Amino acid sequence: MSAPDGDLVERYLDQLYVALRARPRKARRVLAEAEDHLREAVTDGLTAGLTQREAEEQAVSSFGSVRAVVRAHDARLRRLPTVAVLRDVIMTAWRLGAVGLVAVGASGVIAWVMNAAFGRPFVGGAAGAVRYPAANCQHWLALWPHAQSCAQAAMLENSSDAVTLRLAAGVLGLAALAAYHLARRRSRDLLPESFTPTVAMTLFGVAGLVLAGLSVDSTVLGLRSGLGTAAGAGFYLSGAIVALVMALRYARDLHRSILQQARG
Image (spheres, rainbow, N blue to C red):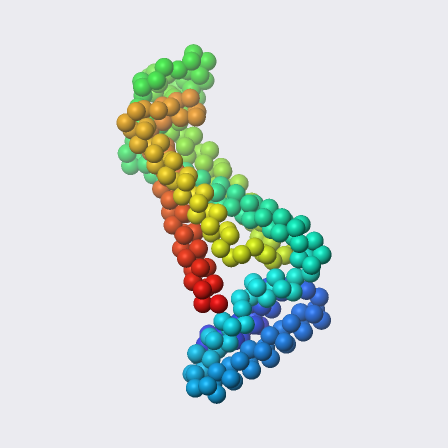
């Protein structure tokens, strides 16, 4: 089903057709009732002196969002409402977890750029800033035989891990997103449209601010990373950049969702 760009009613019915998860007979009845109501509302609007576009916008707005109509006709909410909502919360967590892993992968790309542009110490930390256990030194020197000291080997390992481990997380995130979309095709989201962007904006925003603070601390105080080596500012800054960009992206989605609810 497709519709001309200017026909809002047809576009609304197309979206409803795709979103409905009901038996064929019931789905046809819901679509027929929706179309009758919308066409009648458009006619009333034209009679009242509205333009075709204005009449269609008023009809669609007064009828309610596609998500609201789908929720009203979803049998899961009538049978097991708690289980249905819990399932969608789990699906949302799955999605955000996958997106988070992809964001980690993106930060690995930025760390790679920082390694190339500013040198490995910017990400891996200044060599010689920390004393390391002998066992760790032996391990790092085996991985980086050309390093002139244990501290330099630790810095090289840290800057390398900031790229390779994060890229691996990104690949895992892409696989998780693909699996999510395959599973998502079998059901519709019952949660409010603002739920996902609110949670995502909060999580990414907090993560971005914390990472930005750690980047400053790493520069000023030389704090140690979780890997047991002195991390450079770029180690955290690469993650902060991606997290804050994602927070802004979801803030835009939340703003759009609030506007749609206000118009409805």
